[in-house]
Image (cartoon, rainbow over all chains, first blue to last red; front, side, top):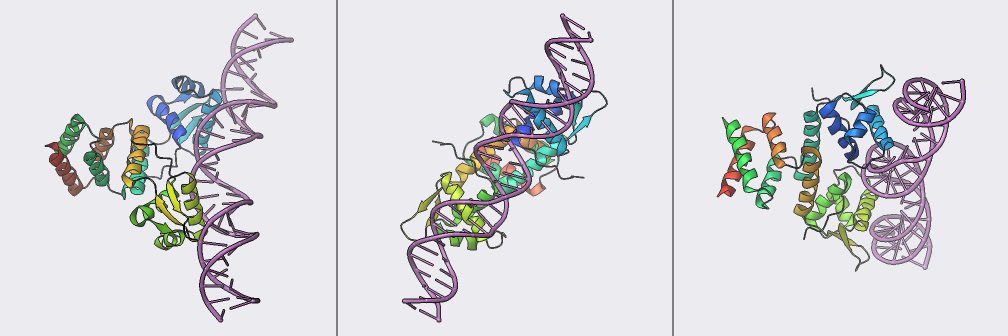
Length: 124
Length: 124
DNA sequence: GTATTTGGATTACAACTGTAGTCAATATTA
DNA sequence: TAATATTGACTACAGTTGTAATCCAAATAC
């Protein structure tokens, strides 16, 4: 369980989002999915290659045109990032983070209500 | 308001934590505060210099031995990091993040209770 | 006042990132 | 089949980061 997820850089994360939604995809399909991001196709290739080298992405080489797919679930990666983020910035507790958001009115009334509901529901 | 905080790297963040707690401090005092972190003093100097160059830290050069102090509040930096983190990883909403934590039972009963209380109190 | 320590300035150097470009083989098109 | 386009492999190159070391001047210790 909880194999440690390798580090995924910011640009790489964009690629991953596409793969998590539609994998497997060829490089070209990823390029198309990211048309709005103004990256040159080669850049996307490089990122795919790096993700592959890092073993965050797998490659199917059965056909001439390879296809790529994630080797970790999105939620797994999110959780890994979240943990390291909260540790680093908020001393390790979600509470401090949420406390700050609440104090600084960074949440809308609606959002707070949703959060309350989520907590209630789980509460029991 | 909300001048954009420059990027603060992971190691640099450790330095900042010390400065936020005790600034102004000389380089040497920072070194002492970070004795447990096993960084060579020179490394800490380098990080202080970089933070200074980035204008995240200010320097008082009135005495031969300089002293350093933060130019941004901790909460300001935390918020900046949190925003970019949530945008990048959770599509921009705190809700998705908290939802995931709740679903995956990443919070203890006690933590959830505290969160509930915080939300209640603010609620009205 | 000489030797030594301390602190600031400068330099080092590899890994990781962002952002591509070149090259060569294969596939497709005319 | 000859020209062209696609795709994968490899290379490029500067900026950031982690992690220091060297050099020199001033201060301090003998």
